[in-house]
Image (cartoon, rainbow, N blue to C red; front, side, top):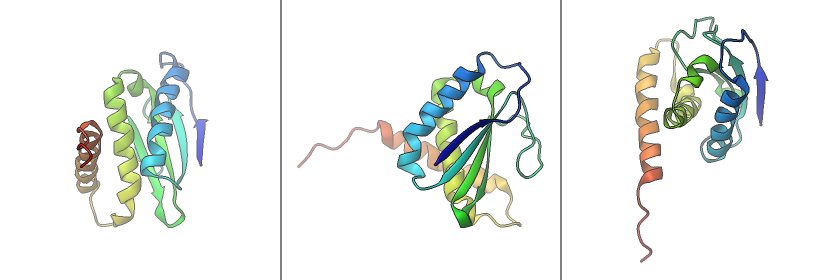
Length: 139
């Protein structure tokens, strides 16, 4: 189940509806492949925002908050940065955020997010490279 909501508008994003549409198209394509069964909410912001932990999103295109116990999560999107992102980089971001959803339950209160970022980046690259790799011919 996916819920799309606008949580804040400031009028600074060029064509915010089309930026949302870019995200939603990619999310709808990739979610059944990667995070089927998860209940994910999306919040759209027209600039930096306070994420679910109370931290400023700063220069992040997106942030993810996950409650893996209930297979629920939320993604906050900075539409100002999405508008400046190529389609290829936005796909990379969508898949990267989905990997955060998948590996989040391994995070502990003592673990720095930097390790999880590296793991998610590596998994994202592997998934996207596999998508482009030629399929072996049937034997």
